[in-house]
Image (cartoon, rainbow, N blue to C red; front, side, top):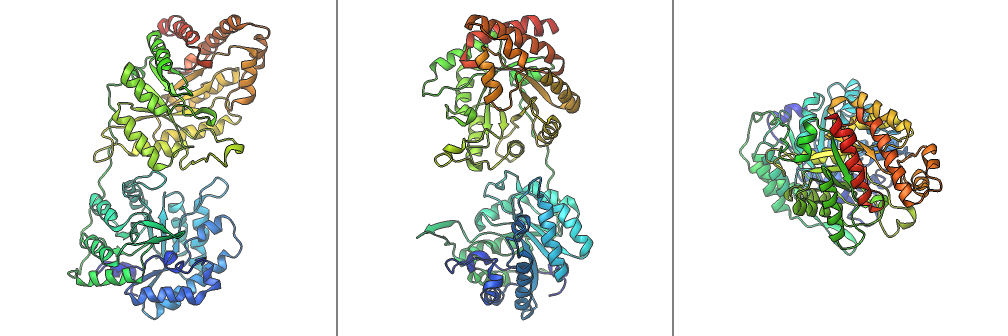
Amino acid sequence: MTDIREHLAHKPLLFDGGMGTYYKAAPGADCEMANLTDPEGVKKVHAEYLAAGAQAIKTNTFGLPRMAAAQTPGWEELAEAGWKLACDAAAEKDAAVFADFGPAPDTEAAPASSAYGLVAQQFAALGAKNFLFETLSSDVGIVEAVKALRVAVPDAFVMVSFAVLPDGYTREGLLFRDLLRRMEQSGVVDAVGLNCVSAPGAMKKLVQSLGETLLPLSVMPNAGYPVVTRARVLYQGKPAYFAREMGQIAAAGVRILGGCCGTTPAHIAALRAELDALPQQTEAAPAAKLSTRTAPAVEKDDAFLRKLNAGEKVIAIELDSPRVADLGGYLDGARRLQAAGADLLTIADCPIAQARMDSSLVACRVHRELGMCALPHMTCRDRNLNATKALLLGLYAEGVREVLAITGDPIPTAERDEVKNVYQFNSRKLAQYIVSLAGEGREMPSAMTVLGALNLNARNFDVELRRAVEKLENGMSGFLTQPVLSAQAVENLRKARQTLGERAKILAGIMPVVSQRNAIFMENEINGIHVDEDIIQRFAGLDREQGEALGLEVSMQMAREALPYADGFYLMTPFNRVALMERLIARLKTELLDAEG
């Protein structure tokens, strides 16, 4: 084929369909390994798509980035065999061959950019000029890998395509417009697009909402949505419907078209006929820049935020939701804390991975019945993307506009056969996702405020601070800290204020110790808490009344030391002792906060 850029300037480029799903129609087949174990079968699939009218085909190497990241022996041989098979098939039709790469995992030990770079350089050495990074949920590592690739192949044609759900978000919670814009602004990518996950009708709506881009746009949807029949995953989308929807996408100016999962040579043949029937366009459609995104406004009628943003010290207090289906006593306790002067009630999300009443539902009830600002904690442990989004929309509709985004305590190993972790996000990605839901034409007209956790007791606090900076960059506004119960925690709070500056609101964690047994338990069994040994010893031999009295004194001492570096306090209620917290709030207000004001 002539140069891809030249081709796109005059006519659309039609790709093949879903190599993996079509080849795997043979039960038990392993797609990438077939480059070595069944080369004729792979070449036959390429030939069928070409005979159907495809002008570009993808190498059968989708899984290679994961193999390279895992240092799987022999992935280089799979790459070479896949490249040769595709080139041999394409030569008969003068079609283009794209080195095809699926997503790579991203870890500190093995960054995604390294895996992408390895496979891209391998194909560059084989003579590849065209490259497709596809089915991506994020752009992590892509720009770095492409920049390195262009050193080896300066005239490479590079496409980057994201897998997007019908609502416009990837499985990592990133909005497709933002991803395409970042690729456009990188200056190293030749075409951007969408593929997989969604069917053609849903993808057409996404394209229509996007408008045009400065770069050629690629659209390669699934044939439809999968169904399971006799333990096999099948796609039942009909070629005629696929071609009709894709024809409308092409008529809107999309220049690169093809199919993903479930699209067979029959789908591509139908699309070929649809494209041939469209009026011929000799010049590329004029491109308009993606609309710029403005930061969504945060509603200003929230009493807690209004006070915090005005520079006043605030008091947030945590009260664990009940373990039983009765909120009567809980709401009574919340009312008392509100009357005592708490500005915000925070509700943990099943702490230490033990089930309690849902924090978000409790927050809605507190807000509705008490008119009190409520901050539900939202972990990444128990919900996937769909469940997270549904809950956030419900919170917003109920008037709850603050969320504490945390990764969450893992489920104990012994219980994992019955209860499964989810962890589709970490707290940074969750924050980014929540922020992305707000704005003109999006799910929320104004932004929720996202807070995060800051562990002042982390063994390597420099790493904790770096993560805090990343959290701010991903949309968090501030932090609630773990309890301050040591001189080192106070020093780390000072460092946090110095490093994060005024862009982050910090509420210093204060949790009264009520007995020596309580102190020993916190020190040894609760992750993220450190109690100085001298504090533990001071509680020896004390009864309940004496323990609470000393706990108040220790809490006041820690609060005094933390106050210069904090925007307020985050109080944690031990054993639901509301009366104790009423006394603590009263002392904080009269001895520290009112005096400061």
